[in-house]
Image 1: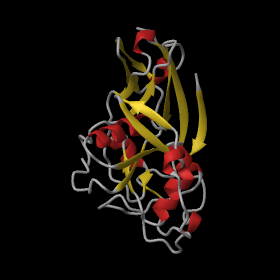
Image 2: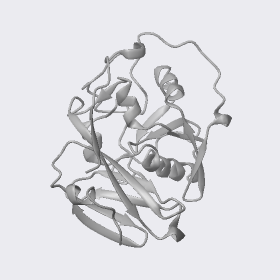
Image 3: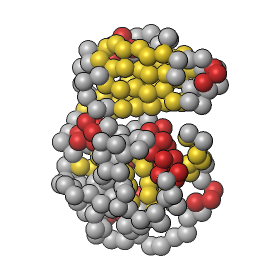
Length: 247
C-alpha cells in the first residue's frame, strides 16, 4: 500500500506574525486572512514569471506559497478552498470559504467578489482541483486568479493559520496509481469518496499513467470511486492502493 504519515499541524499557530490560529473560528469567511500583528514590508512580485498550467483550455498561473502567504498577511488576496465540504470542515485556511471545483457548487460561488479582486484557490493535490476552480473563475471574467502551486499540504507543513474540527488529526498520504488511454493525456482523473464529500484530482500523463494523492485519516475500508475519461472503478482504499487501477 502506498502511503506515508504526516501531522496536520506543522508548527506554531502565529508563525509569521499572523494572529488567530489553529482551530480558530471563522464562521463567516470572506477570503481574507486575520488581522496581522505585524505587516510584512512591501515588496515587488513578478507574477508574470509564474509557471502556468492549462485546465479545460484555460491557462492558470501557479502562485508560490511564499508570495501567497505574503499577500495573506497583508490582506491583499482572497483565498478560496476548492476541495470537498468534508475536507473543508476538518481543516482549511483561516478566512477561506468553501468553493468546490470546478464551479463552486455546494459552497460559495464567489459571485459577490469583485472581478478585479486578487484570488488564490487551493487544494491538496497539490493544485489540480484548485486549477480547475481557478480556470472557471478566469473564464467567468475574474481578472487576477491563481492556484496555490505547492498546495494545502505545504501550508500545513509551515504552520500557517488553520481552522476546522480536526486540524490536529494525524493523517496519512495515499497514492492511487492507474492507467488510462493515452488519447486522454492532459485530462483529469477524479477521486471521490463514496459516502462523503471528499475530492481529489490528477492529470493523465502522455503515456496514459496517473497518480492520485489522498490525505486521509479514516479507515482503509472506506470506499472511493475513481473516474477516468474512459472508465469508472469503485473499491476500498486498501484495494485501490494495492494495485494499478485500470478500466
